[in-house]
Length: 111
Image (tube, rainbow, N blue to C red; front, top):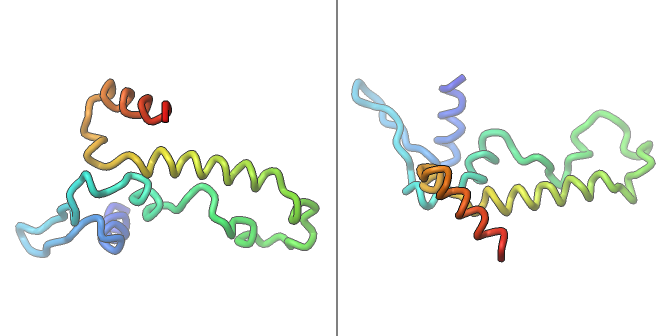
């Protein structure tokens, strides 16, 4: 399982791999240039993609809300909020103390 995750991270250009006895993985970019949101999207996708409803086997033409769907609107708003928070946090930020991270997130909410 870890090998699969590392392959995804390598393909996403988040890590570099070195083969051999002293090989391993290193970050492909500096941690301040790697947004957490990008990493999570590469590993598992986003909560709500624009084509979300199309990926299910149900018949869209039978959906009574396909034209006016409040659930889709809710998930779009949730995804936008998640993107906003995770897009502004980098791997470097995750190395901070919790109190520092709380202040950083609180200061973002004021703007």
